[in-house]
Every structure is written in C-alpha cells, then in structure tokens.
Image (cartoon, each protein chain N blue to C red):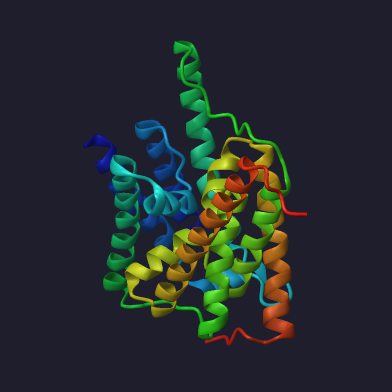
Length: 148
Length: 138
C-alpha cells in the first residue's frame, strides 16, 4: 500500500514540476533544441534545478546509508554499447520532431491535448515493437538459428 | 527562467522521494514500459505513477485554462511517438531516467546517452524547422 501511495504522490509531484517549468508545452522544448532560432535556455534551467536537488539528496542519503553499509546506489552495471547510443539517437530524433518526451507528453495528455493522445499511443506502440523485437532476437539466439 | 528552475526542483524532489521511499528510479519511459509489461503489484505502482502525472496535467489545464499542443500534423506526430517509444527502451531511458536521475548519479552511461539524444534532437529540430518547415509556430 505504501508503495502505491508513494508512486501516486511522486507522479503528481513530478507532473506538477513539469507543468510549473513549462515543459509540457512542446514549443518550449523546441525553443531550447533549436539553436538556429530564438534560443531559450529554460530546459537547461529545469535540468539544473532537478539535478541540483536530486544529486544533493543522493549524496546526503548515501552518506547516511554508507554508515549503515547496506544499500548503495544501483550500479549502472551495463556497458556502453550500440543499444545505449543507438537507442538514445533514435529517441533524440523522435523528441526533436514533436518536442515531446515521455513525461511531458503524459502530463499533456492529462491536460487534454489531442496531439499528446496520438503521441502517447504511438510511443506505447513503439515500446511494444521493442519488446517484440527483443523477444524475437532472444528466441532466435536460444535456438542458435542466426540467419545468414 | 525562475519557474523553470523551480519546476525542475520539484522534479528533483519527486525523483528523490521515489528513490528513498521506494528504491526506484523515476524514469518515465521505464515506468510507462513497466505499466505495459510488468505484472501484479509492480504494474499497479507504475500505473499509479502515471495516474499522478495525468492528474497534474488535469489540474494544470483547469488552473491555467490552457492546453499546450504541438503544431504538427498527424503523421510526424505518430512517427515521433514510435521513435521515442522504441528508442527509449533500446537506450534504457529518456530525459528523466538518463537526464535527471542518471546525471545526478554521475553515471557515465547516462552522460553519453544524454549527449547523444541532445545532439540528434538538435539536428532534427534544425532539419524539421528550417529545412522541411514541418513545425508551424503557433
């Protein structure tokens, strides 16, 4: 129950932050990404505010946690590979086309933006497509039937 | 700029509470993916996070009487969504997971991911706005 209330509350807080910062308006995102137009530094301000709070929090709690020597920050573990860079490159292209990334799009959907409904549906379809592709690759890997 | 930093601070606070109370990373693409593919309680937690995001959007529209929307045709919008959905899963995160959470943890992987998507997004905006002229400023 606590986990569910935490999730709801954190979602609400996260969404409120996105609204206050103006990031649910794709025009504000494009204004940051468009170095050839009327450039706006606001997105950098959002990132700066978020990282300042979160990094400080993590450093502070890590100290306390280290004293108890149990949970540490999850190691990012995985390597830097083609999936990380290729996936991020694809994400950037999609982001640049509409000015929507996942968080703001979902909040904008709540605001009743029709475009956000289309975007979020397509985004979910993209995730389904990824799961399907990954499943197929894993399956063909298991049966060692790698196509030539 | 002040509202941007203040809004960012709220996002940072949310990511902090989610981590400390629940031990999870507030990456929205992962949360959406979990809402689609996880089972049982894990799925419910993710659905509730999404519900919180939606509720914030509802409140914002009521409060400001404004619904910001992209000035974009259907096809590019769908194309954009597909790429964001597929790309964030392949790359393991988006602006919140790699950007806010990853950079706060000084993750090298996240730094490389952020640099990559910022550069491709910048190039894309240039092409879409100044070459193809698909984005009609409202």
